[in-house]
Image (cartoon, rainbow, N blue to C red):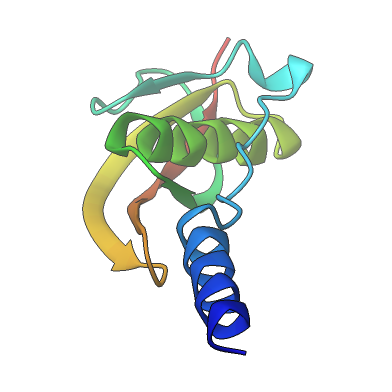
Length: 112
């Protein structure tokens, strides 16, 4: 009985450590042309406000997920340029592992 409890506890620990990570945000083909910049584009029409959230086990992947989501949303609004206004990074605990979170916001533009 004691061995079974130890085995069960070990299994629970391993399952917690190897928990599923947040899946990556895939950049859609139509969003590949969307550029992200901190500068307001010239001679362009604003098509909307955007916000995006990326989460992953490393900060670079979290940032890429947020940027991909931002570019996907801009493309869905027929935008081809994003002016990034805010970019915040944080960490969240997922039980036995930590995930990084990046939140981005900005404006989508349609440029010639």
